[in-house]
Amino acid sequence: MTEPLRQLEARGFALEWLPVSPRGVVPADAVASRVRPETRLVSVMLANHETGAIQPVRELARSLPPGVPVHCDAAQAVGKVPVDFRELGVTALTASAHKFGGPAGVGVLILKRGTPLRPLLFGGHQQGGRRPGTEPVPLAVGMAVALEHAARHMTDNRARLEVLRCRLWERLRHLAAPVVLNGPDVGSPDALPTTLNVSFPGCRADVLLMALDLAGVACSTGSACSSGSLLPSPVLRAMGLPDELLRSAIRFSFSPALTSADIDEAAGRIGLAVRRAREQPADSTR
Image 1 (spheres, rainbow, N blue to C red):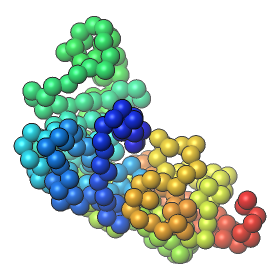
Image 2: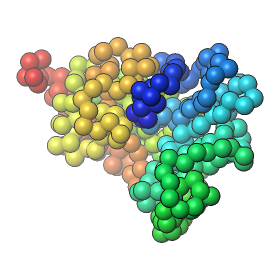
Image 3: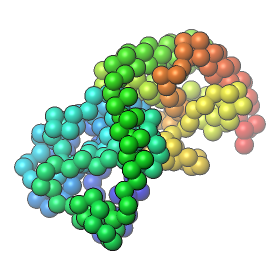
């Protein structure tokens, strides 16, 4: 989510947005060439929330001069793919419990030893003086248990979800053609198995989203952070998608609770909704 960065920009900080490839990946050499002596922080997602693209954070961090702090937003990756803080070589890493089956309202911040951190809130001296207030022990325990469970089943879940992701993609290519993949290739090791972002040329995403909702298919036109917004996805816009693909993009997510039968049923409903949307006169959706 870019809003915290926009707030920093409003306070006078100079921001430089990193470029991404047409598949949504930050080039490995894109960061080092932009670092200046006054650079205060580099922040990169480990996995994108809309396309599932896994970023080369380890390579990006190693390309930087010593002393440049690197923050990694690993909210979408933790619990889904292996994440090793030391191996990544970053200064700070954040994650959210509800993304890996834990309770909402709690997360984790991992800091490299010796990293200074100025608190935003002031009061008691809990959590080393970094955040005041009584620690929510039930939430912390729930997060730890959920993470342990996710890690234990990660390999099996990842393999199973990748099969389901590939299955939906192939069904959509058959039932809803033309359909365009937004993000890494299906089956690529550089993509989360939980996300599939596609465009349906000839459809309007907002109209298709309503049709799919009525058909009992849960999906989105972007991230949960941008729910309620009808603006095109800034993630897809940064990837350079043309307007027709930008305005017809839908994101599907996958859970270990899904079955192959669920995927086939969903693909059938999606294909029908897409065909009907394409048959509508252009002015009937205004």
